[in-house]
Image (tube, rainbow, N blue to C red; front, side, top):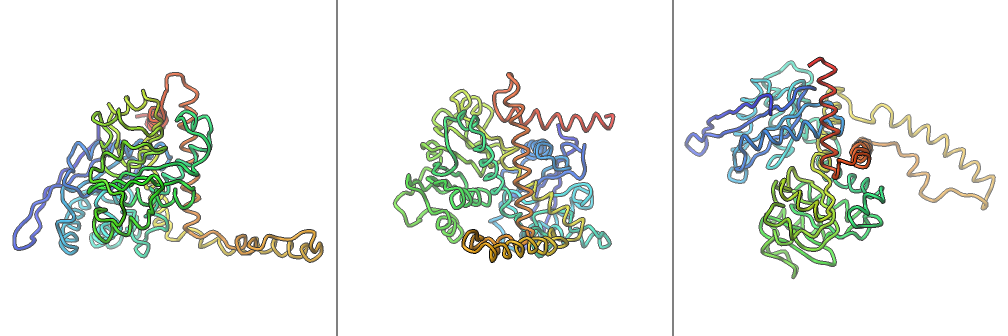
Length: 441
């Protein structure tokens, strides 16, 4: 159960009348503070959903060892029904109601983007906090997922999708685990279906296809789906989606009006990256993917999870697979509190040390002649010190590797643990429990 849930109802004068909105901010566990969790804008938002997602955040943060408790927020609104100025007024008023109760605060409760929100909304919330706390030097840390020029961090927008990629890479480093899913080899050539080409689904599909050689055979959106066994051009589909608000009319012969049916097409990896509950009792028996990666929160219902595992499918659970967002949010929070971007102090010193080695290699190059020579591009690559984006990606990759290995150890060492989800919860709950026990609670 959540420790606390605050429900706010407020009015905003828009279009000549008062419109009333309902929002929530739920805190699941305060074993570590601040608590962390996104704010979503959607008509489906309700108290039960927000509380469930706050609980998931507690376990997600514990699993990837970010020093936060779990929280979540939501506003029952269709963001597409309002223009930018109206949405700003609504967001600022919602933020005001939460800020004055310390439900947005750098040391107590730090939101981030979620479904229906993004960098723009986070900048509005940060500015609202700064207006109400004019002397708080750490005010920028009250929210993460901000634009880069407002205290954000390089790599935050791509973080959740990048985390999905790193999760899959780590899974494929373990041949026993790959064989458990009835697969073999690497990500190269694997057929992937992505449900939802929003921020998470787009970046996951883009990176897997461009960097790992995966073939994106299906893309599912709310107005249908695109399917091609030969693969889809992710960038072209994404550009069309941004311009037209959907994939209908995309200039290709493989549009399917019934998008949900593409979930059931044969593929190697299925990535549900949008709404919760898309794989449920009504379609679980027909899902053919041997490996499912939960890029969204709760895309598989409990009943469907049992059916899929009985069929032999391996599921990489949401509290691990989509933890890239909160991991890089943690990096952004640390950056805001330290008031310096990553790499600023050490980058040029790193380059200077590398240059010493390169000069020595060049001396050997001249001495040995044709018998030995540096690769043509070696000097340029080696001399360049790591910038913030590279450091963020490095930290995220390390986090995803360590978290998977902690899950895998439980999965492979205990006869009573048959799936990664159970293993992930055992790891996370044990860490939360140890924190409470250490404090004598």
